[in-house]
Length: 220
Image (cartoon, rainbow, N blue to C red; front, side, top):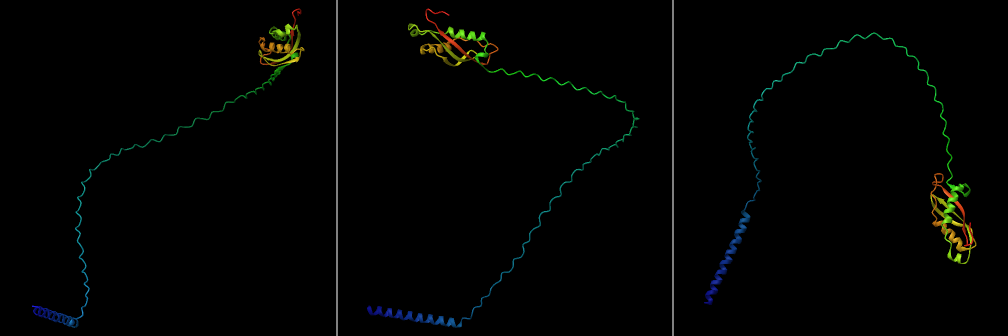
């Protein structure tokens, strides 16, 4: 069996070798005898132009109705005939107007001198000064300590008065006792002053008044 197989394999190998040899021989003969191949470039024939069908012929539009315009006949405008010019009128003589005499110069109003806004004690009327002095003296309160010590005297005070209001009160001449001086200034601050008259309205009046402190046995 082994020999048979070996024989069969040897036969197959031999047959295959023969076939390979014959194939190679055929390739050589084909290479020698094969004529050269010439490449021919084929040119594509131009396409025939396409025929485009003509567009359909549009239908003619219907005829428009005829419109008859009636033109009004314009009558010619009559040209006015120029009227004859009136005869010239002689100018009427005008009498000259007499010149108006100039008005007499008006007299300038005399300027009223401005009143002084601050009056000194000498510029105040005695009548009004007495009213103010009475108002201060009537407001005096005798200090109990001064009365117990049997003190008396008078203090001269000064102050500004404007429309019933007092300011800038001070002592001009002392009485020699501080208690009496303080009582004099207190009387100035609490006194009920008379209203300013038309002459003194809106003006500042400076007063200098003696405030008296009398003992039990002293009378004015």
